[in-house]
Image (tube, rainbow, N blue to C red; front, top):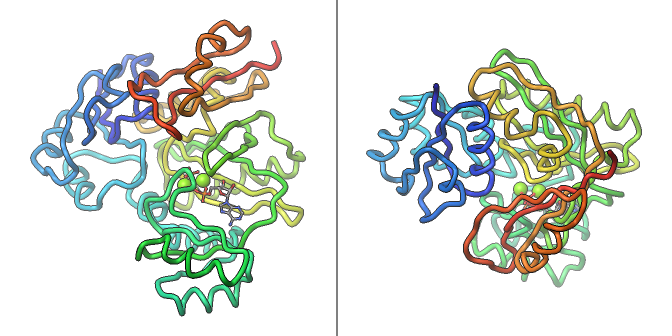
Amino acid sequence: GSTIGILGGGQLGRMLSVAAARLGLRTHIFEPGANPPAGDVAHAVTTAPYEDATALTAFANSVDVITYEFENIPTQALDVLEAITPVFPGREALRVSQDRLTEKDFLNDLGLTTAPYKAVDTAEDLDTALTQIGMSAILKTRRFGYDGKGQARISAPQEAAQALSDMAGSPAILEGFVDFSHEVSVIAARGLDGSVAAFDPGENVHKDGILRTTTVPARLSSAQRSDAVLLAARILNALNYVGVMGVELFVTPKGLIVNEIAPRVHNSGHWTQNGCAIDQFEQHIRAVAGWPLGDGQRHTDVVMENLIGDDMDRVPDLAAEPGCALHLYGKAEVKPGRKMGHVNRIQKA
Ligand code: ATP
Ligand code: MG
Ligand code: MG
């Protein structure tokens, strides 16, 4: 059997490892932090920093293909890994998604619509950008942001200085605030042979910048649903992508606006574990292992709810709730804002 190397040992790496195990494959996790959630279920774990070329080399030599659960892999580490073993999704997907500016340039070059945006490095840049984009905007760090971290809303001129100082000198991007009716995402996959499949779009609700729930089916007309799936396919094809990607969209009266893309399995795709024969994790493993993509048809309505921080206190009740599939990540320490698990509630038999 072959072994899949996974960069990152969080809950996504854990659920990828479970899916790989179901297919008779082994996983080897590379993770700088101690006691990674994926370590409980993977065949092997390497604990080393991304600067450790010796550890990276040994890891790459021990696996048949390498994938990842997060997009911020240092370029130098990729150079070492790629020279030994194929990495999927490939370099272009990482280059594009590691930086919000590169990402928005790429999407607009493809003919897709994003929020209006402008790079911001200085106070003067911010002034100019606010003049062009307007006083309803969000300033975001270009790199490393997640769960709404590294973002500041600007709705009045006097909020600009504080927003810029919140960026702590990191290169930033100003985005126009999109007046959306709701948010949806497409979880799409592309195989080594270039075939593309997409799961039914889910509707996402965020709270405090963190995904709270995903509901399928999403509120979309059939035209909007095809539009969402087709634009996702266009992104995957343009990147010659291999694996699963999450594409976050704003729904507006003027059409779909792309918020951001994630070159990996995505929190808003967790519903597929209980809504489809083949879930996003197995689909990703199939793609990177060179298997045919599986049947991701949705067979039931699902509401996925994240269990964050103290939500863990509800686990005994949730475990007894009919139609409620519990997925826990085995994280020892509960922290506010920390994703500890999720539930998928099946809505229809
Ligand atoms: P993730 O955890 O999804 O990677 P992130 O930190 O990269 O999150 P974004 O997806 O950019 O952050 O933004 C988080 C949320 O903030 C969005 O889902 C949306 O609700 C809101 N938001 C972000 N950008 C805009 C915008 N330009 N207009 C309106 N709302 C926005
Ligand atoms: Mg993001
Ligand atoms: Mg997002």
